[in-house]
Length: 107
Length: 118
Image 1 (cartoon, chains in turn red, yellow):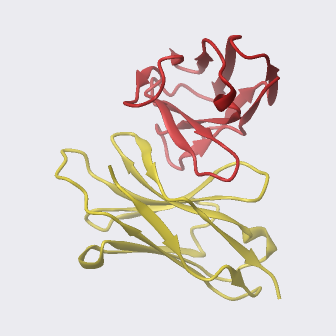
Image 2 (cartoon, helix red, strand yellow):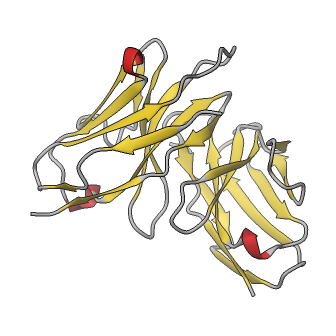
C-alpha cells in the first residue's frame, strides 16, 4: 500500500497570504496525485488532478506541482472561503489511498 | 456533470449487515470508463477507499475490507450498492459514493452518516 504523508497537519494563515501544503508518497507515483478540498459538513471536491492539471470552475489561486514522491498544493492568496481540510490522493496503485489531511484556518 | 445521492439506514446493529445505495444521474458518453466508488470517513478522521465497480461490473476492494465488502451495479436503475457484513463500532462513518474516472474521483454524493450501535 502506498502511504501519503501530508505536512503540516494544520495551518492558520491570514487572508491574502500564501498557503503551501506538501504531500509525500512512500514510493514513486509519477504524476498520479490529486488534491481535494473538503469543507465542514460537505463531501470532498476535486481541485487538481495529475499533480498540476486544473479543474474547470476551480479558482486560479489553486495550483499544484511535483512528481515522483513529493507534491505541493499552493493557494496563492487565501480567501475566507478557502477554510477547509485538504487531502491528497494517489491513483497509481490499489488500494487508492489518501493523505491524512491538512486543515487550513483563515485567521 | 454527474449527480450522486446515497440512501439507506443511518443506524445498524453490531454484527449485522450495512447496506447502502447510490443513485446517479445518467452519464454522457465518454471515452473514460467510470468506476462507481464507495469511500468512508469516520467522524473527525480521514478518507478511506472501500472499493469500486466498473461499468462492466469488475470489482476492486480495499484489502483491509475485502472479506466483508460487496459492491454491485444496476445500470437499468442508475444505481450501485454497498454491503458491509459483520459490522462493529469501527464501521461508524460518513459513507460517500463517488465516480472515479480519468484518474480521479470527480463527482461525489453529499454523504451519509451510518452509526453502528445497539
